[in-house]
Amino acid sequence: MDKLMETVLSILAGSKITLEIFFLTLAMSLPLGFFVALLRLSSIRPLAILMDVYIWIMRGSPLMLQLLFVYFALPMVGVRFSDIAAALLAFTLNYAAYFAEIFRAGIQSIPRGQYEAAKTLGMTYAQTMKRIILPQMIHRTLPPISNETINLVKDTSLIYILAMNDLLRVARTIVQRDFDMTAFFIAGLFYLVMTAVLTAIFKRMEAHYGKYDE
Amino acid sequence: MENTTNNSEYMLRARNIYKSFQDNEVLKGISLDVRRGEVLSIIGPSGSGKSTLLRCLNRLETIDKGSIEVEGKLLVKNGLKGVAEYAPKQEARNILARMGMVFQQFNLFPHMTVLENLMEAPIQVKKQTREEIQPVAEALLQKVGLYEKRDAYPSRLSGGQQQRVAIARALAMKPDIMLFDEPTSALDPELTVEVLKTMRELAAERMTMVVVTHEMTFARDVSNHVIFMADGLIIEQGRPAELFGCPREERTRLFLGNMLH
Image (tube, rainbow over the protein chains, first blue to last red):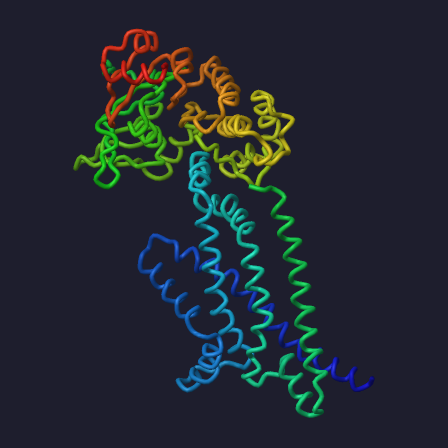
């Protein structure tokens, strides 16, 4: 029993870094993704193309490769980050690309009539985006955003390869030391609890934004 | 149409408007005048350019050539190279603020209640406080008979109710001119009646209105002036009694014959 308790506590300690990566990535990639979506939709062609290329690279290559690149390849050319900063940079750039595509589709799904109504009422572009387009976009993009967010919880386990003592790495260390699979089950349970909490939060948000149906 | 210089009489003047979409010339030199308190109806077959014309008047489309004057102020004029030249941004914004618009598809903001739909622009654009605008908005809802629906979301309303809210929303900005782009075309016949009733009441209050419509009865009974358009041109215009009573042009006769069975 003591041993089980010790395993749980170790994994709990490991989940601290997991949660840190998760929350910080989310906090940075959501606004960055929105910004990228706006640039991607802008009428300034070179900017839009640049964003296309960025999205293509981030979505078209493995996140693992991107992690290794930031962590190992960049230091070779003199760009150095701390472990956590390297992980955050790779995760944020990667997730921002996915979020950008979700936001872009969300913005484009709002009928033209909404912009026209706002325009004939004298609203500026900024007012229209903030008051009319964004709230409707959030409503429409919550399900795919929820999906990506749950993916992010699980993707944090990739930092395992950077030798950071996250949830999964701690579990593996215990399994290898004790020849006992329990730690894996407990780690799995941790992920499941986290995704369950997220699912519940998104359900509430969808209900909140869905109080009008279209 | 006489070309007087007395501008104040006219709320809206357009001269020789040309507009193309790619190679397709949709407006081929349209001119019109709307006097204060006048109701102008624009009728014509679909594809005649009448909706485009209306959208050009409030800059939802930019014109290629021609000029538009709103209450004596130039929104757009013919520039030196014969290309349309719009007023500077802020000036254009002020001019456009004189016009309200009602769309075929209503275009209410679905994430806001009826009352919020009415108050949004006065608060955001005119920087009015909630306390100032709420009584005005509620009075407008009373007027269109939808005060009870003030806290409902648009999706809970019928098409006719949504369109009356849209009219009230435009009126909340206190425009001098109201533009209607086929306001009843998306509605069932029994819902059309209630929207037309609201529009008749507005006309009776001497609101200046430009109405693109398929409702011949409305055009005949309510408007002071009717324009018949086809293929991007004004084919015929005049007082409704003349145009409906004894149309001069064959195109007009054919069109009216089809519309009135």
